[in-house]
Length: 137
Image (cartoon, rainbow, N blue to C red):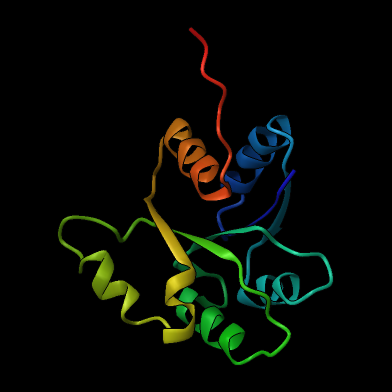
């Protein structure tokens, strides 16, 4: 099915998501750093969805997206932002998005607040990947 990259420096999140996405038939790659995420995103193996934590060990989402937007080898990918900073007392998602390089803003298709419910994340991922679940009556 789809190749999902999760860029998150919390080791428990990728472990849990690997089990879930594997059962759904997806392949998951993990990058705890900006450098590793950049290497995977610009590599030969296309990524369909990037689940991107705002803060990583060696930088943040803005730095990664700035590097990608300047890289001619970068192929467009759908981005789902993941952050604990998406709270009521933090700037709006639109204000956060305004910090991103203009070229990649349209690729940010969704936001999910950490900690997230697994069923909510699955729904968002299925929607972003265009997966339609069969309806049973």
